[in-house]
Image (spheres, rainbow, N blue to C red):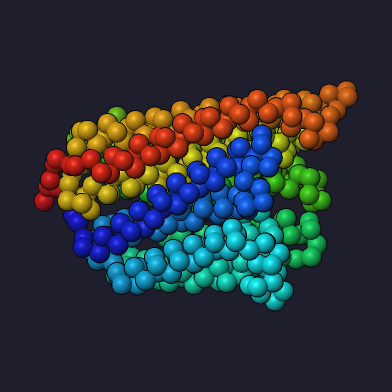
Length: 458
């Protein structure tokens, strides 16, 4: 059943993909700066490229989550969106605020930007991933609250399901934990302690609820498996996620000045974090194997299965590799962390947003699915991006292992910069894999411009 107000998702999805391209371009710039230190300097210094790369990632994923919610909630609730006009207004506010913030990063020195935007009043800037100026942070809060009002009112006036309930809990958690970005105590240990309440409890907590809800929705649509079966899996996954993810925050507290017991709590519970991702993989494949119909959108099915596998590998396996305190003693802050971060974000969140886009966009354009030719192009994009991210992860893992040996384990440890010079070959290999990823993204986006054949069935 289609609802007219679901169309508000389309600009969110389009903007998300545009910001995704920007994120990858700045990632390639950073990759070159690792091996050619003065590349584009002083026009785009490394710290600026890094801010744009990570902030674009966060903003486009938030755009994707909002678009997914605006599509999913009306259909789950069996009612039109509470206020489509509010949804469109929030889209433009969010997009303009994000664009102005990026322009500020690129054109104004960061210290000057902090003075210009009232950082003296409420000091929130200068923290990794939370570099946004105060007006941007306030704008995010306003947009998030208005968005949540719109979604919550839609759910309240319509049918209540496990999927839109889990999604709502995840979205409200996202907004609530972002408020800790405004808390910036003078004590560095306390600062880092609560900083993780945004960064970790987003990506290893409430975002996983959003991921589970979106994946469950798409699997119901493309497999025809009974809702009760899928909802039982969803409850198991989110329970495991919350139990392991919340206490697993402790794996960030090992070496920042917190009590020693966090090394035990962090090690034990974060070692269990791969379990919900493994359950998610079993869930996706089990549902597809039990499907009652062959959905014409084969590309969306591929993205859904890929989400399970790649999130398990990136967030689960690569997270476990360096999560135990005795191992993390040597590996923290190395390229092994970067390897885990790249594959985990791609597998868990990039892929689930693209899964939703792949499923919903053809329907919003009046098709049950894109043409076979378009889906072949989309699948090429899937494989190019997925294989590229696997190689990026492997190259960064190799760089990290060598870095740990040269810098921290060797009887004659090298300085940081000398060790970096020794691993530069892996940085070059990572850069070329990044170029392949960009090509895959372009191929994926090009699939939207290939004419469709099938009309949506009533």
